[in-house]
Image (cartoon, rainbow, N blue to C red):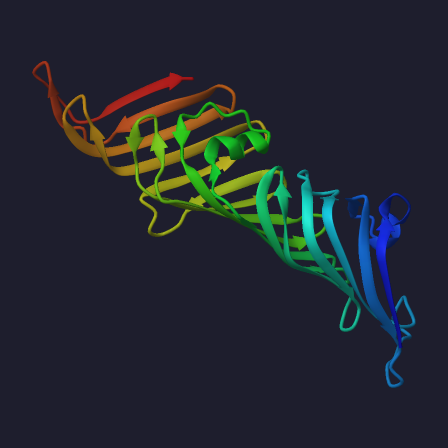
Length: 273
């Protein structure tokens, strides 16, 4: 049984040894490491790459982490991870705080090295504005949507094809000057495509698909105040095309209003912004 402790290990020379895996890269000035190595007399080490068991804790304060198959950086990470092969090779993440593309997050979960898969949760620490989130993720959006979001992200599946399941919640969403109610969504990202589905209880019914350069998004609003006719009615909105110049289609399904003596049951309008 052997215990060790290193207060400041410089990563310029030792980063490849701290996390010796091709899938990951880390950057920081230095980290602190402590742990233990041991052999149990009754253990069979014939199938292991190392002839001993280990449990190593790595503490850091401004770490940058990136996975080669995930395009987004995690920066300014503060907390600790535990590397262990006591049952299987695993990295344990414990209440790590930092930034995911400059969005403040907390990270918990496990990375299973033998199975080469993730089970990691990222939770937004503060509410995130819709437009700020789109900007930080590199999406140049001109959609007239205004709201603050609570965001939870679950990264799962295998290293070479991870899936990202995102839950987005807001008490109130606004399009232009119209308050539309709460929104509760689930987004599943895999192979560069994000599918969007509303959750039961959401006031706004949203479905769609986000691609790298373009998107399609359908919104159904059951009761929207229409000031130009002084009544409320269901509204369907469709957003499509490029993020930088989307097309909007407005569909008033149960319009049922007289204009200049003509009874109009449905009104449809489209525009580019």
